[in-house]
Image 1 (cartoon, rainbow, N blue to C red):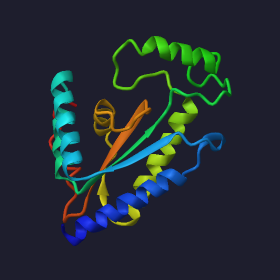
Image 2: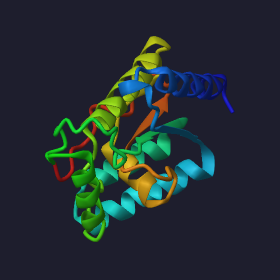
Image 3: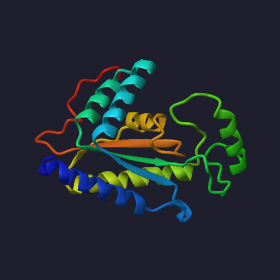
Image 4: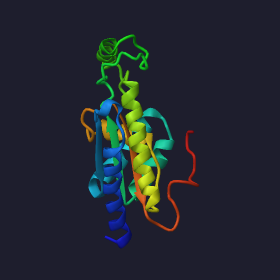
Amino acid sequence: MTVETEAVETVARLMVLAARTAPKAIGEDSITCRILTGKEQEKLSRQIELMGTELGLGFFSVNADQVQKSDATVLIGVAGKSPLGLNCRGCGYPTCEAMKKAGRAAAKRQSQYGGPNCIFKVSDLGIAVGSAVKTASIHNVDNRIMFTAGVAAMALGMLKGCSIAYGIPLKASGKSPYFDVPTIGH
């Protein structure tokens, strides 16, 4: 393990701290975080590749390669199917109970993100992810928010109870591996 890799793992822990302490709607925390390295990260990379092949989406291959080459990957997800009981209609349903009922019916269909999701929980996830990547940036760790890593992590059961997730691969090197790459299937 290099000094840079050790530093990236420390920053990954700080990112989880930032996500955990980020503001949440009505103070209810439904965020789940996890740090992957080594074999777990390789497993995630393989799943991203597999899903890309199954879905016919070439950009998954690019992301799989980027995750594979990273020093660590932070996963952040939210239990978005559990509404806050505010009946705000932000999810598109007249009540939180109606959203939950629609979610049970939707569970029979396959999708990358099982919805509907509470708009406040989705917002909480966005704030948590933003806080995490801000922390990586402050510490000069290259990173990229990936939908592909999040759906692959959920498919592998790495974020129990989450209905939406993102993966944030991290790397310390002379050039960011996450930009200036081929765009396959965009």
